[in-house]
Length: 412
Image 1 (tube, rainbow, N blue to C red):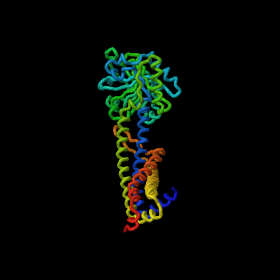
Image 2 (cartoon, rainbow, N blue to C red):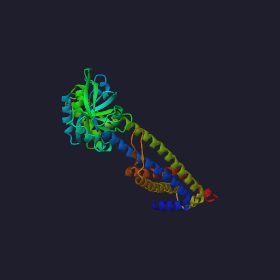
Image 3 (cartoon, rainbow, N blue to C red):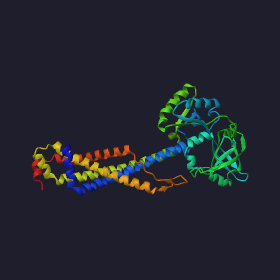
């Protein structure tokens, strides 16, 4: 095999201009696919962290059976009772891969400063658990003023645009109103401890965060809508979901469990869009590589017809001629991929040095444009393009191998 590679390399050097153009096409395609994959990889990572921590979804959410289908119609019937909450938390937190399990309650109603009233959407959380789930996102989207605390049960955090609508600052008192589980209107005084930016224009004029106990008192209930579970490793989400289903079923708790990916519509939509763009780009590169290699190898066969005839006359079999051209195609693919990898490293380094930013759709703040180097993908792409180039060279190689020896020797 080494002699075929040696001859193939010499033929590439002999036709250096044509070979370089083909390798350059492969290199640009390699760099484009690899860079886009690196961008998508970092985007998926950021979206996953945003869903799990930024949105506070955790890795798993446990609901009472029927809540997802009928919770809006009859919430009191499909909410988790205090006994069920305690039992679920005890079972789930007994697993070593679980960091915490905490109840959460969503609610909506009216908020007023005495002159202006507007709707609000709120989530009732256990402050300490919520800070653990959000992690670095508390620093990324800091609260102006004080944060939620169980020591201040009547304090809330209000989204900045909602605070502007109500013309309030940290420390101001407002009134929130919501319907209880019995259908009666309940109104409570609250103190706006701090203001925060949700990062999404559609929610920044509506959201309120309050303590879990305060949300229960506003709804006049001791129940919860869901239990959020935070894991030590997101890759254990699937196995632990199945494990908890069996454990909770054995304990007599009929529930539904959803993963962060199932609950985050934004993550799924962006991922599907990027996957489709990647597929489209990859198909374009695929066609370019195939056409470039076929054209290069076809011209090589045409120009080296007499050489092929001489090799056949010296005893080289058809299989040997085919292997020679196939090796040349594979080497072009490999060298083009190596060139593409070098181009990829250069662009990656430039992006890292410049640190460009952009404002993604649906966001209120700029984020850095980052591209990751994914070694497994790069290695796989090199192997794939080498195999693709080899495959693209097979058709010209077969045509070369089938030539009549006498006709090939007399070719002009």
